[in-house]
Image (cartoon, rainbow, N blue to C red; front, side):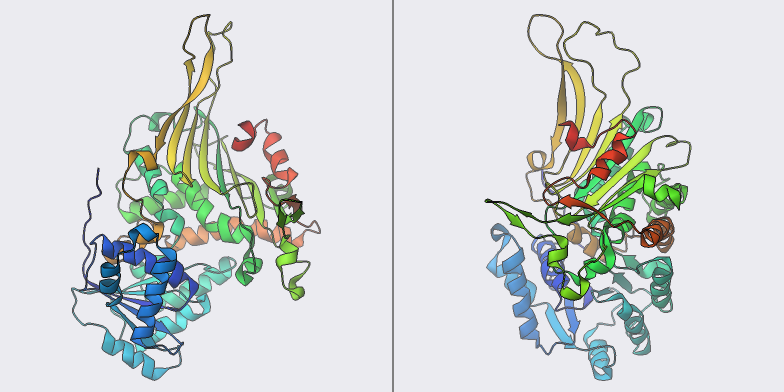
Length: 493
């Protein structure tokens, strides 16, 4: 089976922050793959904008280096690379450089058939000044699109200020707030699994589901990322990625696949989340910070050891576990357990839907008790969907019950390469499809739910719980779920 490649309109993609790490690691490789697959050609252009003093040739060389470093060798085609980098050009500019804005205006085509998109791979405090300059220099068009990256604030108020700044120039239907998790194929397949099959929807409710677990675990540490210590796991992962996953699991069926129809349903979920405030924070949430480990075979620094001297003693959390409840008819009484952290036992992102046990077992004398069904959606790595079911173990000698998986592995089912998230999202901007991007009211609803948790932590005298690097987090996270008579998915295996 081969993918159907649908070309997009010609475009001028302007990347502010063109010399940054995001552009090198994600944007250039993603655009290269889409160019290689024929989704756009030399009629489109990529225009880098930054303060660094580079020529077009320098920027093209940087693009070659990014492809060499971050694209798998088997997909590197020298002839295609040369064709691809030839559509790159570069403009030296910063917000205060009037000459640079004039150069940008000259570089852009006035043809209304050429999509104009601006990717702001810069700090959020530059979003408003850039938007204003685009308007002042008449680079802005009503049909232009602007892509903005997180962090979109550190709380509700700062998020609103950032969005207000962008909204002075760009209408909401022009703004694409990117969350790369929503571009993952397996995340999109959650929509297909739920709404393109009749099998699951009748049992996708509190009558049949016991609880839901969402885990996003990373085996790497925070390293020397200055941003992370200002953010922490609650802001970095829970407020955006994980709440978006929760919405896709819990939302009602939208009327269509229209972007606003889908985002309306996600917003309803966010507004139905039971607030976690004051005394509930200590019962419903756990925060942790990894400590180092040293042995004959391995040595891993603690989070504190990775920090610069002036930040020693930081109480920034590198781990969060929490219990969320959705107050509506479909999900009343069904807890959602969310967990994310750095320096965990392994790198894994998955959703586990635990169904309720059968109401009555007729297999009283069987060897092995029936286990409740479980649906496991693996987002990364080894992407796939697994449904755990009970069968009779083959052979004579009585009834022996055995749990086995119905296993859909993406790698085995689809022979071709699975596109990375940015490949889909970057060209969705050109298509004008906002389905996989966050709307402003979604973002603000997420902050309204997260802010009381963060504020309670800041008031608390209790530091984050310690956990050993390479484990599944602090003991408090296990106690959180075990108090309800449940266990984390990996603890059951």
